[in-house]
Length: 209
Image 1 (cartoon, one colour):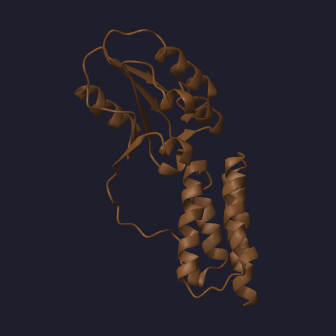
Image 2 (cartoon, rainbow, N blue to C red):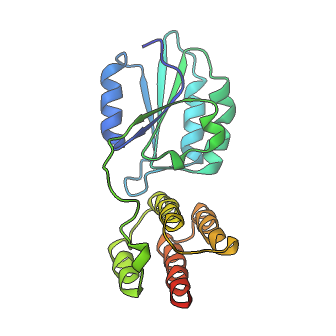
């Protein structure tokens, strides 16, 4: 396993990925760092500090730090930048998440990336943007009222792609609503509220088109 370098793993299931990696690594060489709150699978600054502290503990053999989370807070990633670029001797970092959106571009530039996600072959969104109306929006929001921030960001990105491929003509200002929605989600605005505002703007646009 000495050929391993600092690597980001984008996976379908974090727990399964951890189990598989641990089975392939030398026994007693793995340290798993993740939020212990099972209701909040978010890698925060506290987890980053724990990882940094563990990394600087001297080791005569290689050790692997598995940094896991569906969401990685920006401040946590920024605190990891230096140690990922200049890792202590015998310390290898694995970041495990379910979407590349969770990782900052500055982190991507410092690590290998491996995608271990199965292609589900599903459509970009559950909505028919060409026939979007209040009923569709209501049903979607009701079904996804507990959507996570990460899932909402992916939805907004996919929705933007689908809208651009449709015959809906949006101005530059209207297209900016998608990027503003992403920024609001990154600032921890309530996902359901952000999606409601975005979808209602599309319904209104169709009505006056």
